[in-house]
Length: 388
Image (cartoon, one colour):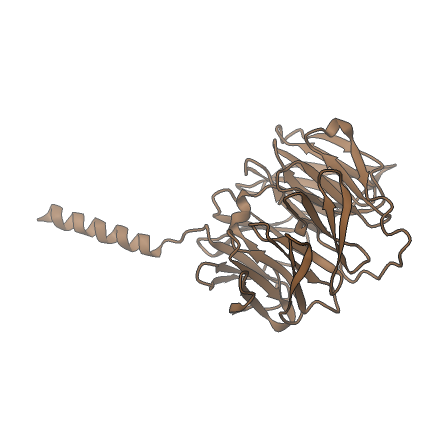
């Protein structure tokens, strides 16, 4: 009898633990910029699970996830690096690693966290396990100068790619021996690279240039060929509109044979032929694009805009390269994120203090969550994507 009772007790205990457990594949983080906090959400049922406070300056932020999706690593503007436990709803660890940082990446094997810093300029490499410093890579150029680093992404073969804003360089960093990173430097790539993008297959790194026309392209399959300049004469004879918010290149998209990018100084999305890297088409938009993001199936491109048109979102039909829908979503749509298979899109609507959730087939709103000045949405399936 005792053995039977013990066995039943074990079954009931296991059942209770299973009921209390939390899977991590459909979790995400919504950043609340004004309060320096983050919401842990579950996108299958549109649920708010927890709020994490005291994360510092989140006015510009990016997030990556551990391979097991247990932890989110949040890079704050104040140089803070926070490791968030998505199961226990708490800060696992937080450090201040620099004076001013702009983003980060997680290595291909998931063991290393890299942070891109403005001040002091450079890259710092940390253990994803306990955030201890492994390597400090100053972005040195000229005579004792340090450059701001931007456009940091992870790449195949345990590599990082980053652009140096002040130096006009792209660095390819090999972390196979993280204590002694090997750096290949590509100089004179153009004036003031302001961000970078890695194609979904991990092959091409493209840096946008703020100081001159064109883009800088590095083929990671053939780095010995150096950096190639593309679209060098585009826009030279057109009036430049003021830039109210810099486009985010990590929101660029490739689908099929096309690369979709926001046009700097123009109210357009450029469609670039990936076979020859020539401009194929210019799509007129309702404002200056910030994020140009493809649905996971590649059929549609969703675009948001800088002020004063940041209440709108437009959808481009990839089949005919035209705007098929314009949505009035709310005040200041800053960021969006697709669910893993793309049936929904979550939008951070800052000045309405809401996250609005839309069906990507019907373009109708299906749910919303309250959030304090949301400015970033990041889902845990990013753990399995290259270039974040």
